[in-house]
Image 1 (cartoon, rainbow, N blue to C red):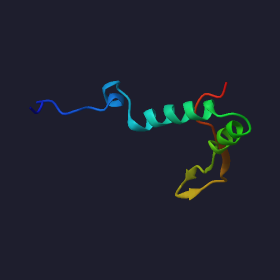
Image 2: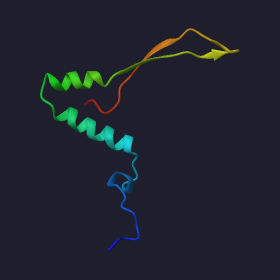
Image 3: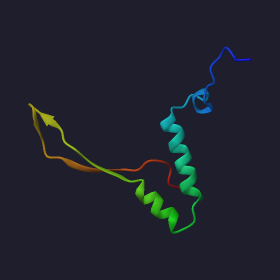
Image 4: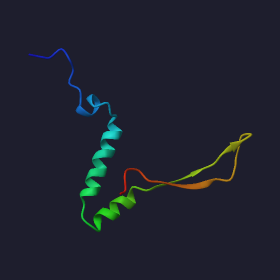
Amino acid sequence: MASNAAAVPFWRAAGMTYITYSNICANLVRNCLKEPYRSEAINREKVHFSVAKWVDGKPQKPRDEELWHGNHA
């Protein structure tokens, strides 16, 4: 017998997006690793990017940014 309601993934039923769910899982795996693998995995999580403000159709001097995802306690 088929159900009238389509199966919903548990992360969707919990009100999360798949990206949020996968980030939580990745943080759990990184935190379970032993050293030195843990610190290497956490360092790979860093994201570097440049931000430039545009004024009158021309980019101003860019500034470098560093972004960390997750909780690093």
